[in-house]
Length: 130
Image (cartoon, rainbow, N blue to C red; front, side, top):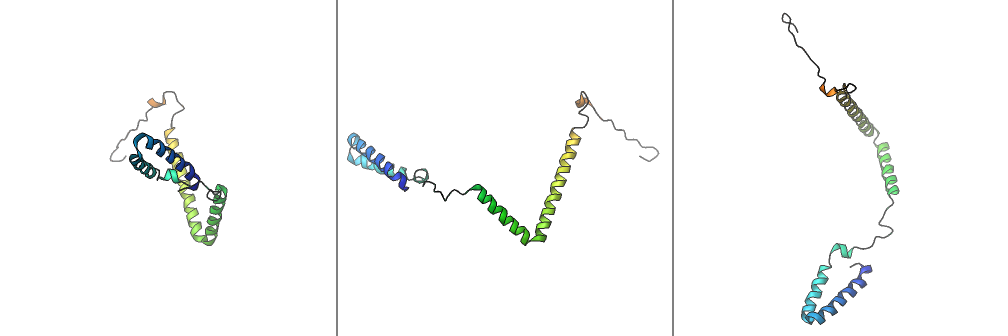
């Protein structure tokens, strides 16, 4: 059990036990006492206070991750170049696709009643040719 909660928890349980002895008798008060003790055996009641060493500084962790990443990039130069190149090409293609879709969706939006504009296409065959 967490030492910082032990004294207050035991004091509360003994006070409740004394109250229940006068109210329902010693035997039933003992049963209720043990039921309450077992009811307190839950993680939220026995959690220890955080120490100064358990909370790491986020910037120190980030600096450590970047240092490890740079060491791996330097150690595996060809593999890193392939991965970074593939990532750059993938991001460029995704950006081009997004720009193309945005351009297609914004076509003719500068006109009034643009939602009623339609493009008419005609397909003709002239002596077997398109």
